[in-house]
Length: 148
Image 1: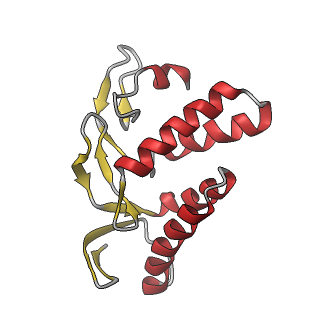
Image 2: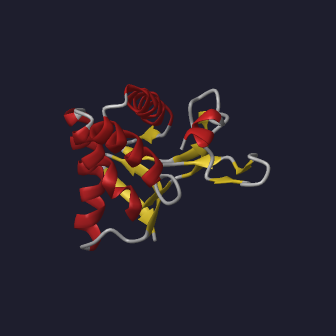
């Protein structure tokens, strides 16, 4: 956990894949879905379990960056860890992101949790489930145009 933290970008974001031998990032795209979901979850939950303020600091720093750099139109898109919101890598939304509103509640950010949940719930209502991956094409007048 700490070795990944020490390799975060200036935006306080992590890449999706790291070379375990060299410690260099292999892929610089980042998101809150597969590959990174547990990292953020464990930062906050370890703080809750152990009371270690360093872990709360790491979570709060990561959380602020995620909300600032990945949040677009009510969804969290994948961005490049080195460029943040200036380089949206993909408008994919994955079912693994569904943990995020619950983590936001645990962090005490109820307003953003409601917004995140509402966006994901719109997709659930449209398909009756959260499919593995959605590709958001555009949002216009609260209508989400997607492909799966």
